[in-house]
Amino acid sequence: MSVKTIFITGASSGFGEACAHVFASEGCRLVLAARREGKLMKLSKELVGDAGVHIVQLDVRDRTAVEAVVASLPADFRNIDVLVNNAGLALGLKPSHQVDIDDWEVMVDTNVKGLMYCTRTILPGMVERNCGHIVNISSTAASWPYPGSNVYGGTKAFVSQFSRNLRADLLGTMVRVTCVQPGMAETEFSKVRFHGDSDKADQVYTGTEPLTAVDIAETVSWVVNRPAHVNINSLELMSVDQAWGPLAVHRGD
Image 1 (cartoon, rainbow, N blue to C red):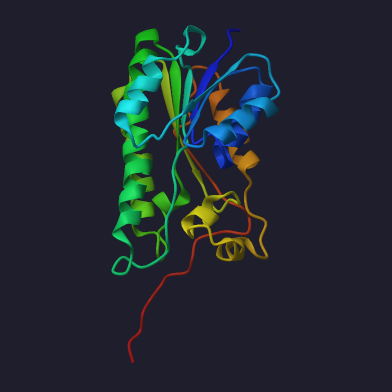
Image 2: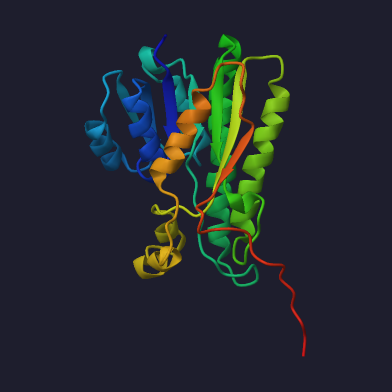
């Protein structure tokens, strides 16, 4: 079998970093993209595998940069078999009428536009070769609202629906599309959401056993390694310590 080339965004930490470790252990060739080049360099030295790693400093919100990075990939890394659209974030938990609108803009630019730019830039090559796999990391927040999720949940709902529409567009090709929707998982996610407040972030997971980054990476590996005729459309997973909330009803005095 030929060596798969995997392009992972947001690869410097969390789900992306874990995906890098899992795919490297499977003998895959990796393109690791993230804003923090130092973390990427450190990660590339830690990976166990000999197929090769190419790191790129990239902010997916920059459309021109995304196009330039993909166009300048070394020959051995140019034919991307799997794109893991992992770069994304949540910022804040304030209600919509109190939120910092700059946080909304960053989430839309990263979670929606960044994913669009990477997909549109890499997908034509997959269609031309008639093989490939787009794996989009969404969230249970795409389907199940909670207070403070407002725009974050909206961006992840876009990711989920965009994934379905990609499959509709790609019918008749062998290019697969999967949307993975994790629930509560302990990574840098909550620390980023609370703008670096570690105490607030730790409280999110107190008394629970949340999903881990490795849980998600192994899930991504599983969907990618199904037979070529099998497309996992969407896959939602939660810790057993998480479920959906009861019906919310406000009763006035």
